[in-house]
Image 1: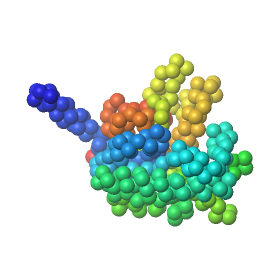
Image 2: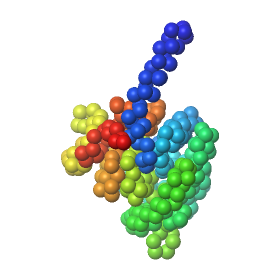
Image 3: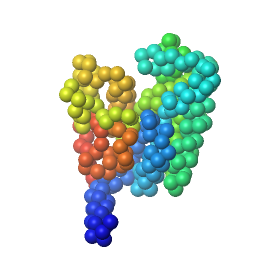
Image 4: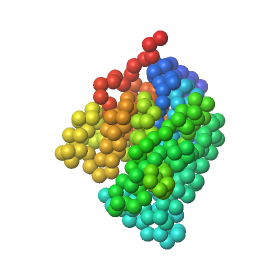
Length: 297
C-alpha cells in the first residue's frame, strides 16, 4: 500500500473516532443488554470480534450485559448422546434428560467460551446463569414444552454489582423454577428481554442471523414503533422466527427499556455501528425517542 493511501486510511479512522464523540457521550454510564447467538458463536474470528466490541463498550463507559444462546451446540450434544429433540411452534420440547444437557452446554461450554473470549481481549468477564442468586425465576411456559421457562421474577442486583465493579456479566439462559426449584431452559431472546426490562436498560441489542425487520417488499425497515410492529405481525408481514424476536422487543419496551434493535450479528462490528454511528444497524423499535441525544451537561 502506498504511503498516501495509508495516510488516507488513518485520517478516515481519526474522523470516524471524532464523529463518534456525541454517541460516546450519549451512552456513557448506560446499560446495554446484548443477546449473542446465531452462527457467529461457532466461528472463532467472529467470537473474538464480538468480544472486542464488548470490551470497547466497557472501556468507553457503557455497562454491557451479555446474554447468550447455544442451540447448535445443544443439538450437537443431544445427537451424540442419542437424545431425540422435538420442537413445538419453534420451541424445543425439554424433558428432564434434555434440560440436563441444556444446562451443561449453556452454563458450561458456551458461557465459559464467551467469558474467555472477552478476557482474552483485555476485559473482565464473569459467567453466571439465571439460577445464580435467583437471577431469573420461572414457571413453565407451556405444558407441551416441558421444562421451558417463562420468567416471572427477576433479581438483577447481582448484575448491577458486577458491572458497577467493572466486570462484564455473561448470562446463560437457564433458570430456577418457582415451585420446586426445577431447572428451566429459557429462550435466549426471552431471557435477554426480561433482564433488560428488569435493569431498565437503555438498549437491548438482539444479534441474529438476519439483517433486521423487513416490509412486504423485502426491504429492511430501520425504524419502527410498537404499533407498527403489532400491525406487521397481524397482517403477516412479520412471520416465522421474527415473531418471537419482535414480541420480545415489545415486552422489553413495556417493561421500561428505551429501545430495542434487531440487527445482523454477522455484520462486522454490528453493535458498535448501532451505538456509535449516525447510520446505525438493523431495525430499531422505540416509541418517540430520537436516535441521537447528546448528553446535556
